[in-house]
Amino acid sequence: MARRLTERSAEIAILQKNLKDLQGQLANAHKRILDLTKDKTVAAEELAKERKLLLELEAQYSAKLYDTEDKIEKQIEEWPDVLDSKPQTFKRPPQPGYSVKKGEKWVSIKDGKMEFDDIEIKD
Image (cartoon, rainbow, N blue to C red):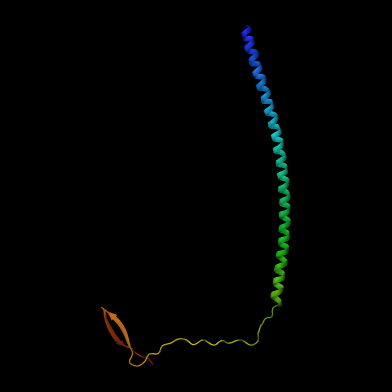
C-alpha cells in the first residue's frame, strides 16, 4: 500500500508539473493572440490610411488630367486654320528609264543556247 501511495504521489507530481506547463503554454498563447490582434489592428489602420491616400492621389490625378486636356484643347484651338496661304509644289525627281533602240533583241537561254527575239515597239 505504501508503494501505491508512492506511485500515486509520483503520478500526481507529474500531472501537477504537466498542468503547470500547460498553464504556461496557455498564457503564452493568450499573449500571442493579443499580439496578433494588435498587429491586425495596426495593419487595418495602415490599410485605411493607404486607401485614403490612394483616393487623394486619384483625385489629384483626375484634376491634373482634366487641366492638361483642357490646356491641350485650348492650344489646338489657338492654332491658325491655315499655316501658309501659298502652297508649296515639289518637282518630281527624274525617273530612270530605258528606251529601246532600233535593232535591239531580247536574249533568252534555253538548253544552254542563247536565243534572240526581236523587240516589238508599239507606238
